[in-house]
Amino acid sequence: MSEFNNLNTNKCEETKPKPTWITGMTVEDAEIRLQNDMRQIKKSFLSIGLTLKHVRDNKLYLQDDTGNFKNVYEWAFAKFEIKKPTVIRYIQICEQFPINLETIELEGKYKNFAYSHIVEMLPMNNELREMIKPGMTVTQIQNIRKEYEKNTGIDKKTVSVQKCSEFLGPPLTRVSHSWLMALGVSSPSKNSRLMGRRQS
Image (cartoon, rainbow, N blue to C red; front, side, top):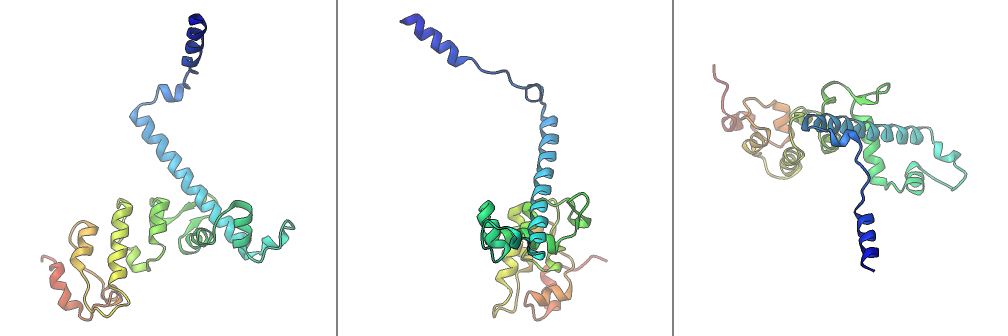
């Protein structure tokens, strides 16, 4: 009986050898591999968005005889369980950000942004997007957006430029007049004292 138990134990302890790409991996190899994988993930998200947009624009869902689909949202949910808000987000990214259709990659200044960064920038206007840099974390971007939203469309006529500066890193020395006005600042010159003046 004991011999039987030993045989079972030895058999359970047997493991398949790990592939060489894992056993020989260094931290540098891991970083390169993850960068490539993350790049591929971003490309996949963009590809999904472009495909959904094409289905919507060309009403391809009407060609599917498996259901009486009225729009791309019903079709995407029935086929892939993608909910409407997610479909909208996928499509909006393809509509608002430049994409190279040959390589399926973001172009220009957005090329080095992660997909999660692009999602956070969706609600932002162009001037606020200009203040977002590729090296920022998602939390930093969220804080900037929250500060902007908190001071927009309400009765307050001042904005915490210093807080935005903290989120952005180095203190701001210049903020465009139109951006300040968009934030509800009635007197840009008055708020410039908060940011400090450019040293001559």
